[in-house]
Length: 356
Image (cartoon, rainbow, N blue to C red; front, side, top):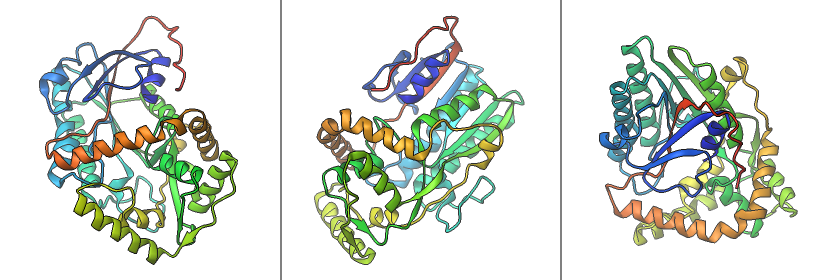
């Protein structure tokens, strides 16, 4: 909901479409339960809309088939654009991912050739092509494709939250030397970048990576988190080969139980492998982030200490339940917001909703 709040603060009237009710409604003028694969659901919320921002995606690494990734990420995007065409909406912002690049030892920018290694990355790249084709049909259509790297921030209970929680509880174990460098981006900077893109959209297609610099090593990131928590940096380490072996045991247990466990060989490898990207294009065009990576991490830890820690058990139970549901139901679809800013409101004094 960070983006919805930012859009409302900028004077936009925002309509949301999602499979589930949002926990926070700050900034939403209207919300509808619906599915991007349903034309009726989409058309019911598109009247009066000037721009669509598509954040809908399947992205988990467990319990989702390759066909499902493409059905939602590519097919759902095509459905959105088809419905936009019927409503004569010409502005579209698509949240893609750096997963389209695949793996590399180098820091990759927008000029790098995409070589996705996962169904998720491949389906996102296919959705980008759908957007490009849609834009080519009408010279008045405008498309912005954003490829963010790992996004973290307040109210996000994904990877960074898990890392903060593990360090807080004394459960973090470093795999390898901790020298892998990770490109990340702070959610408030991503919102600012999106608003910046909206303010300058012109006919055609623009592509931007989004990364906040500098890239931190795992050891540096852990040290910042521990300091913000008021704790000593964890010193427990494990050789990478042993960590991968432990991860494979969890993979076996997960397969037997039919559950997506929090530890896996793939996640151990991912944590110990550098993933670096560049976002020189958007910054070269004039965008400057408000927050540094360290400020973003410290802001998230402050939120964790104030509210996130108490929510941790509930969040993990909820997330595990969703993962179990995804593994059991082949037709399940990822719960992600499609945020649709409509015409700018004539009332300009709609204050920024505070971050909870």
